Structures are given as C-alpha cells and as structure tokens.
Image (cartoon, rainbow, N blue to C red; front, side, top):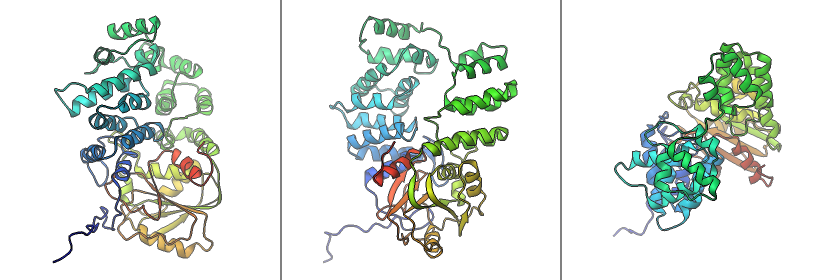
Amino acid sequence: MASINRRKAFTEKTHEGAPAIRMSPVQALRRSVMSCLLWEKEFYEDGEDIATRIRKLASTCNPTDVAAIAIDCRSNAHLRHVPLLLLCELALTSRGTSLMRETVPLVVRRADELTELAALWWKLHPDTHLPHNLEKGLRSAFTNFKEYHFAKYDRDGDVKLSDVLRLTHPKPADEQHAELYKRVRTRTLAVPYTWEVELSASTDKKFTWTKLLNDKALGGLALLRNLRNMDQAGVDQTDIQRAIHEHDFHRVLPFRFTAAARIMPKFESWLDTALLRKIKDMPQFDGTTIVLVDVSGSMDIPLSTKSDLTHLDAAATLASVINANSLRVFTFSEKLCEVPARRGMAGVDAVVKSQYHGGTKLGLALETLSRVVKEPPRRLVVITDEQSHDRVEAPLDVQYRYMVNVASARNGVGYHAWTHIDGFSENIIRFMHANEGGTSE
C-alpha cells in the first residue's frame, strides 16, 4: 500500500508556465495586496478575482499578520483602498479582541476613509450592521482629524461622515470636540480653504491657481495632477517651477512624476529635478548594484482603467531612483539588454525603450547575466511581475539578491533564494538598505 503520510507535491506554475514557488498564506497575501489598485484588472487576472483571493487569504491568516500588512500597505506602499478591504476581513476574524480598535486609526489616514471603510463593508455585506469591533475602530479613528479634515471630505455620498458619526458615537475628549462632532452630525462645518473649494468659487482661474501655489495649499499629488490645468489657465511658469522645486512630495509614489511628465513634457526638466531629489534622499548602496527590469508585454498593462501609466512605468521609475555608487542596469524580455545607468526621467526612457516588449524569459536573462558580468556585484535587484516563461534559478554569486514584484498575480518565482519584496514605493529601497544593516530612513 502506498504511503499517505507524504506532503503533496507543489505543481503550480506562473501564468507564463514556469514552475512557481510555494508560499505561505502571509506571503501570498502580501503578494496580492502590496501592488494592488483595488478592483483594477491586471494583465493575467481580473480585478474581481484578485479581490476575492485577498479576502480568502486574509480569512486564513493570523489576524495580527493581516493587521500588520494593512498598516504597511497604507503607510509604506501608499495605497488607500486595498488596506480598507483588509480591515473588512479583519473585522470578521478578530472579534472579541482589541485589534480593530488599535489598527483602524493607523490605516484610516484621511477623513473620507471613514466613510469609504463603512461603505466598503456594506458593499461586501449588504443589509448587515457594522460589526462592533469595526465600530470601535472607526470610533478611535475619529480622533485623527480636525474640523478642516472633516469639512474637506464632508460629501454627499451614500455614506456620509454624519452617518458614521451617528453609528459609532465617538466620545469627545472635551467640550471643544463635542461641539466639533455636533457640527459633523448636523453638517454645519466651516467651509475649508481647499483648492477644490477655491476653484469652484472662482471666476479667475489664473489668479486662484497662483494664489493656491503661493499659499502652498496643494498636496503633492494634486500639484502633479493639475499641471495641465494651471498651464491652460495661463499661470506664470516661474510660479509652477517654484512650487515643484519647493514641494517635498513625501507621500507621492515615484511613477507619479513619470505620469506628470508624459502629460506635460514641457515641465519634464522640473519634474526630473524633483524626482532626482528622491534619489538624493535615498540611502546609497555600496559596492556594485545590478538592476534587472522586466519589459515583457505583460508589464504594459495600465495600472488602472483611468491611467495610461503601466506597470512597466512604475518598475522603470523605481529602478531610476536606486542610489548606488556603482550601478549597471539591464532589461529583459525575450533577451537580455544592458542600458545606460541613467537616473530620473532619462533612466525611465532608457528602460522603456530598450527592446521589444515580448515574452518573459527571466530564467534565460539570469543565465545570460551570469556570463556577461565578469565581476560579481554586491547585490542584484530584479523588478518584475514574476510571470516567467522559463524556470528561474539564481546563478549569480551575489551577497544580496532581491526580487521586487510590482503586480498582484497569484503565483511567482522569486522566493527561497531571493529576498522577496512586493510593491512599487521607494520605501522598497529603504527596506533593502535596512536589510543590509543600514537604517530605513
């Protein structure tokens, strides 16, 4: 009789056909969420399928691990919606604990996320009450915000801030807070000074945009997304240049600069300078660093239905902000190709235009790389969606070997011999630096 006390062989493959690596549920969950723009279709998988997998994985993982991923996803990956999905699943698996009360305030960083979290719960669980632990989490999150934040996001959606306040009953810390919550409930908040309010009330767009720039009233993402509107309104270009130069763009993902430059190429040099500042702020790697970027056809899928920017743009921009004193950059698709190790926008263009965007032969690229690189580098960084056509080994003799996954596909190849990282935030680079004994700051 054959033995039944034997672990079942893992035979899953990537979408391209290479043998995939077995992951733990926590690894699989991180893989699915850290590059996920919720409900958005990717090259290999539908957005609904990705969301379904995230919910299933979150229900099987330890709740403390799910909470940690949700916080990391919001704070370091700068994603907004998929962390809320994790919170909805966490509400089901952490009943009877204080985990939601502790976690929700660390994830809900904008006042409109109070309403979005409640609305998402009812989208997933219609005709139900908010769970008590979710109520407690939302109640705790109310203390994150002041009147300005509430007023900025007091909108006429299906779920309003007044609805969330009425359901959660946040306890005011003092009389001042009690009056504030009363104004939230009655929707009598003071009209905030925001760029949206100012522009909607303005008849002179040039004057208003200029005032907003001078008052530093625009967030980093709002500034990048409205460059064309400012230009069309006739705003003096020196004012636009100064605003780009002075803004810190702390929470803006690197690929947003690429998107802005594509829309407004006349401002590319200023945007490039701002992007290069991110490089200056990055820790510098010692020794030789080799970066290998996936330019296969699957990387050409847009990040969202409303964006012309692709996963390749995100990967190329991330590669362009790696700060190393000795850097070589390669791309791969059907073959391996070395490109000039340029920084900023020039680096993005060099990667994107390096070769035809065909199949994903990562195994061949790594094997070829081991032959063309004569002196072993200190580290190898592969930026890809990991959907290789051929078997992936790790032949290069390097001290640090990183596989950076910029998509949410179910299976991947970059585990075991690799330090696996998911996402496309520049915080990935800080993590690598910390992993090698430096600091993450």
